[in-house]
Image (cartoon, rainbow, N blue to C red):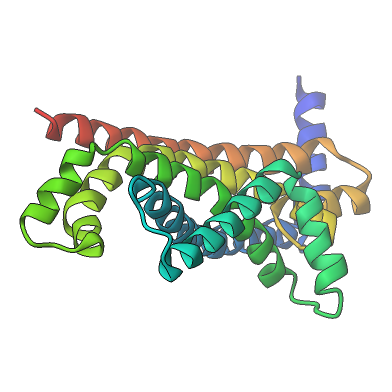
Length: 242
């Protein structure tokens, strides 16, 4: 037992204490959180815009006249559908490598490029979540807004969106948890994230067990923390229905 404990202490000292290798973990964690935050903001913005375009097209499809505005909306709706199809139909790691190693190969700002890649990918999923929430609202809500004198945008803002946020918030938060875990592939484009930090330590010490277990435990703690927040939000939403 003592020999086993001494071995654990030696491994811990080798992987984290010597040459201050723990800094690879802390630096990677900081980059992972920053990438996730920036990607979350970008993905939410893109998702809201795309969901607005697609739901507006679908909601106004019946009886719409072939005006110039309708043709413009139809064009942007088609662009949004292509965007969603491509971003959801290809692996995020491939998208990351294309952005970092092909399109912006001249840039060495890996954190910004990774945030862009993950934000674009997340935006496609967020768009479908929000669009589903908007389409689930009964058309009577739109008619009620119109009867109050609101135009379409005012009806969406004051009547529909508050209900949509309540319906899709748990799904959005689960998407953000998935986004946090997806950033673990950022190292494929040489971005110094948390997983990259663990691999760097293992590459120097030739000891993979402790660095990778440390990385896994950190992700587990972060996900459990975010999951607890999602559970609290869901309970609040359920209690507000009564």
